Length: 313
Ligand SMILES: [Zn+2]
Ligand SMILES: [Zn+2]
Image 1 (tube, helix red, strand yellow):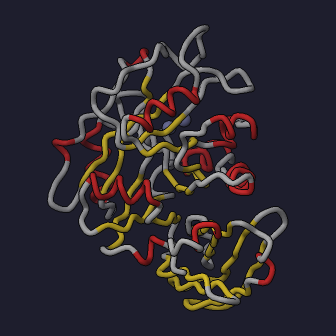
Image 2 (cartoon, rainbow, N blue to C red; image 1 turned 120 degrees about the vertical axis):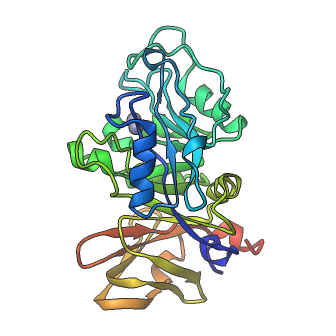
Image 3 (tube, protein in one colour; image 1 turned 90 degrees about the vertical axis):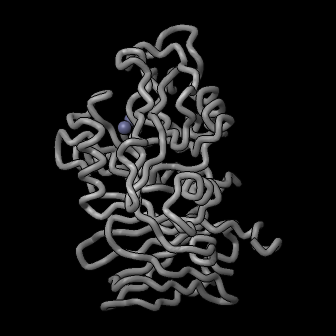
């Protein structure tokens, strides 16, 4: 069985799903943010400013910055309600309608009686958005918090701004726990760029679609036809009878992870076609693949759920 990112028709388009501008607390105007990402070779971005009253609930109109070689998905970082630690929810929503109804979220502090984070996430998903739990480590997210966002499509496994600004970059721990509870989730790497520090061009998604079209990209995000990267390319992941077969750009390690303590690494020099034995993962309902290059840059496949393989998906 081949992961959908590699079996789906089309080619890969590189995008950043989490970005801020002067419409909230970023320091570059939307046009300049789009210009820089296009100049760096990105095919698309989603400008996801903070959707709170302090900034007038912005959903950036990036349509004027689309070109023949660059597109945008409308989006926002949504906020309302308190997590278990009493702090405000941060939920990424890509593919939001421009008239998405604002919650009562005046500022970065929760206020009594406002919509909860799970309710807001559900409303975003119902409106057509791809919904992700943002920067779990930075937020101080608990497992109960993570469980409560039942509308999430995805979890940020890497947030470049949180790596640069506070060494709290990851979401793999809560992602793996939710996968082991049976949740059907993908993972994304993002920048969360504000351009206030070197918080840009560090983590992205490679989305498989037949054209660089917002609707096709959004659909591929929802179906999991993508992988995430800091640099390396993943060109194929196939689950075979006794092995996971991975094709990639030249990497130094290929690591397969599954439920609980299940993990196995193969190390080598300039590896591009790597087999990892499946034995260790027989009891795991899911697995995923990480590749690491000699510079320590990683790329991550989406998880494979074995329940789905029985149906040929
Ligand atoms: Zn945030
Ligand atoms: Zn953000």
